[in-house]
Amino acid sequence: MAISKTAEFFQDEEGHWVARLECGHTQHVRHKPPLVSRPWVLSEEGRTAHLGMPLDCNFCDLPRLPDDLVLAHRTATFDQDSIPASLLGHHDTKADVWGRLVVEEGKLLYSLEGGDEPSTPSGSKRHTSWVLTPGLPGIIEPERRHRIQPVGPVRFFLEFWARP
Image 1: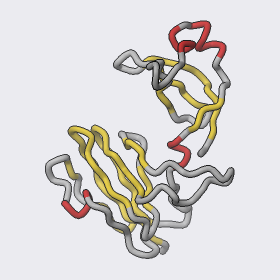
Image 2 (image 1 turned 180 degrees about the horizontal axis):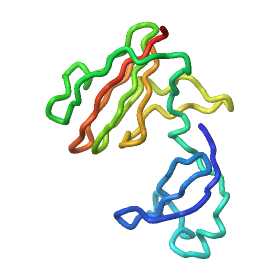
Image 3 (image 1 turned 135 degrees about the vertical axis):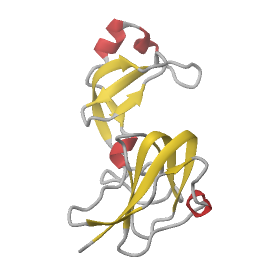
Image 4 (image 1 turned 90 degrees about the vertical axis):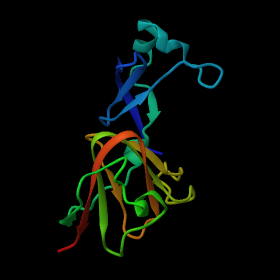
């Protein structure tokens, strides 16, 4: 799992505390005992004292497109009602074809099959599910089994990338 340090705290639209990490990603830091005990997040002093603390960043674990690829195809935009059934079940891309899930509105759950998949350089297990939002695309590695699921209303499209 990728680790990043906390750069600042802010509240989301629902009033929950969120840490902005040095990597640029964000993570909720809720105090919800007994499952999550973070009483420090409730005070300005507590949050200030936790600036610079390391947090696991699951978004840094998302696969990345190699630099030498070119866009080969883009699908139409889908919504929660028009997603092809084949995308909702486990499926994969062809050899040497990468995918990029781009959310225009809403949220989309992107899951990789299995939890024993590649470890990070530190030897920790990679995250295998992410909630994708506008500005946070999901990358699909060639022949990697995955599935998607809308999280409420959503609009998204797929891009397919390959080497020239």
